[in-house]
Length: 233
Ligand code: 5RP
Image 1 (cartoon, helix red, strand yellow):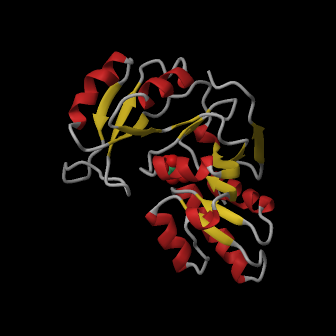
Image 2 (spheres, protein in one colour):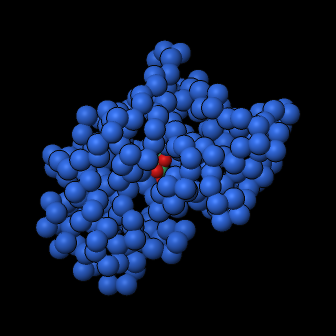
C-alpha cells in the first residue's frame, strides 16, 4: 500500500451510514472511491449517497455501483473527501491540477466538512513552491489575462492537451497555470485579486476549506493527521 492508498483508507473511518459523501477528483480520490464502493458492496454504510466533483469521478462511482446524486438535490454534503496538489501547515491547499477546481470548490464550500487526503509529497511550507496555481478562465479573450497574471508576479501558461489545443474543463472553460518563483507570499490576497477579475471563474487556492488533512506515508504504515489552523493570509 502506498501513501495515497493509506490516506484514502484512513478517510473511511469518517464515513457513517446515511451520509451524503462528496467525491473528489484525481488519483488519491479514485483510491477512496474504490475503497468506499468496496465497503458499500460489502453491506456497510447503508443509504449512502454521493456527490461528484467531476464527470470522471461521477462515471467511476456509478461504474462501481455507488449512488450519485446532484448537489442541488441534497443542498448540503455531509463530508467531502478529496486530494490536493499542495498542503501547507495550516491546511490551506492548492488544488486543480486535475482540472476540476471549480466543481471541487463548489462542492467543498457546500460541505459540512472537507477532509483532504494525500501522500507526504504534497506537504509544503509555502503554497506555490512545488506546483503551479491553476486558474480557470472563460475562453472569451482569455489571452488578455496574461498581463494581469504577470502583474501579480505569476508566470502564466495555458494548459493544453497533447495536440496543443487548450485543455477544456467540465465547465467548458480553459485553465492557466501560474508559476511563482518564490511561492505565494499572501495566498488570501492573491486569491482576492484573481477573483475580482471578470472572466476569471475560479482559482485553485482552497483556503480554510479543509479542516483536516490525512497524510499517508509511502515508507511506513502511518497516516499523519493535520488539523486546520485559522487565518488565511
Ligand atoms: C483535481 C485535484 C486533485 O485533487 C489534485 O490534483 C491531486 O491529485 P492526485 O490525487 O492525483 O495527486 O485537485 O482537480
